[in-house]
View 1 (cartoon, rainbow, N blue to C red):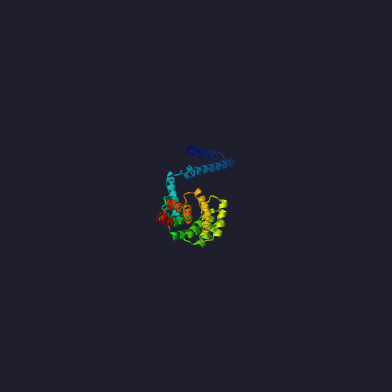
View 2: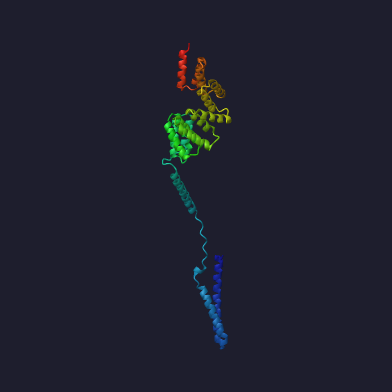
Length: 328
């Protein structure tokens, strides 16, 4: 790159050349005067004139032609400082717009609602649990996550119609979910809609042939429909796979009780108490067998045990009270 010192030197050289050209022109004129030979002074004169003209035009060259090149513009720190926040704010604005399009109207936190519902379930506050699950289904992008808990919560507080309505919504969201089908069937069974309950249990068995809850539920519905042969066949299949299944043992004992096979029924219920002594049903039926066999003391003892485990059983409470009144 040409520096300012180099340019100053070039200008000095041009001035010297111009001075020399003038000297040559003067010598040419003197020579022309001193000689009459055209061949000598004419070419020399022409050459001097041309050289002088060239140097003259060079000396008169506009100053802009030798301007130093401007250095490239340096990046401005102000640009970086000012534009970066603008870009950041733009990104935040885009995120906010996307969040607003997905979030509920009031900015409800459905994750917090789900946690509250789970806490209510753990505290056995089933009314609150059902209410919270309903809010969750209204606000969550995945309402099926409330299933089957919402239907079961309604059923636990005796709101069977609400339970069935909730399960209908759950089935519409996940028609192939076996757990939802079983919960729905149980709610219908509680409402004594045994035909629909049996159909749902069968659907669950088709989807999961090894599901013992669905098989046991179907056997219990068949028992309630007084289809004893079908129920007995179903129970035998369950106990073959799971001999310690106390639900199946209870159904097997009830079948024997209804068929008036009291010794068999007693053995079955005693087998059940050996596996789970805290099931009130086993003790209640053992008391009824003892009462039928005219063993009031044994019956009273079993009734007391059953009521200690389930104080809400009004039928057993009435039987116990009657035995106490007739006690000698």
